[in-house]
Image 1 (cartoon, one colour):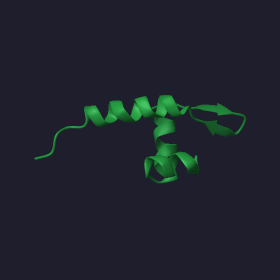
Image 2: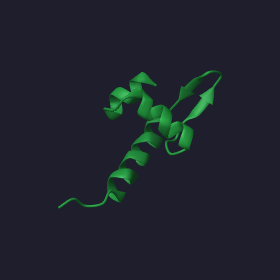
Image 3: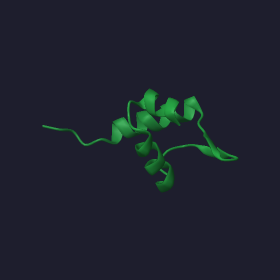
Length: 55
């Protein structure tokens, strides 16, 4: 999870919160979370295009 937080430039708590809400693609293997880079990239791009424009 720390690698994903570094990759997305956010805190691990943010990743945990997104996982709890089911907002980020990932799956649990035993007690560890796993992430697919392609799925994360698609998720990130979708979030970037859905952001409201700032003035």
